[in-house]
Length: 351
Image (cartoon, rainbow, N blue to C red; front, side, top):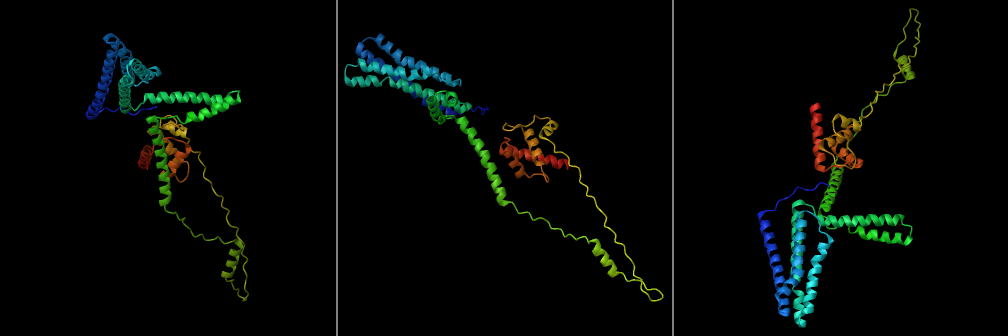
């Protein structure tokens, strides 16, 4: 799949993102310092407090840096990393709640380690959004969609071929549940779907407007003089010719022979077979255009030339585009219009 070109962050965006990241790091450090102070007030030993902070906030910080690093490299994070970002602060909270001397202090001790958890999740989310903005690729969304498609393929096969009827029904229901999750959170997939629908809507609107504003064509009527039949021709000749008179005054009636009309044999010009798409592609030295695949500009011109001259008279732009869509070829409206202009320019040059 072709990804959009990378975009660079502006200085304003860099400053705002940096200003947003500093409080995350600062409050995460304050949470660790608060946990250290709480543990010290109970055990009165700094080594014990440092051990608790290292096991809770320190390990969370390591996982947060791992998450940020993998995200900046355009890779998805393993499940263990994402689970540890919440498990370790939760264990630190439980530890603080257990060792607190009073109920009020138990709430405070349990709430303090969550600052590091929120800071780690915020940094990971911010790094992920930066990568998505610059590259247009959301590795985390692709990981989720790949997992959903894998489960969907398994359940579809299970619903079709499993020998147990109950298992088939269960997989059928699970397939419909998984179908709702396909493409969730994938901005790139949504953008491609929008582009496809935009092309279809543009083609539909163009066809509708062309049908509304097209002028009716009145066929030309040519007066045809009927050919006189042989009997009528003979009668007309007899009435119009005066018979000659002899010296004795006797009229001589001439005998006119009916002349049969000349037989005309219609001549049908030989019908040449239409040029195939493969032959046009070979002449243009381009690969044969395939249905459902993206076409180059030269292939678009070949397809439009082939469709235009499939009928006599040649198709117009609207008719050719309609035939292009109905045949199943793929191409954006702007590229098709540009290829049509190139085709028309070439025909004018040949003329």
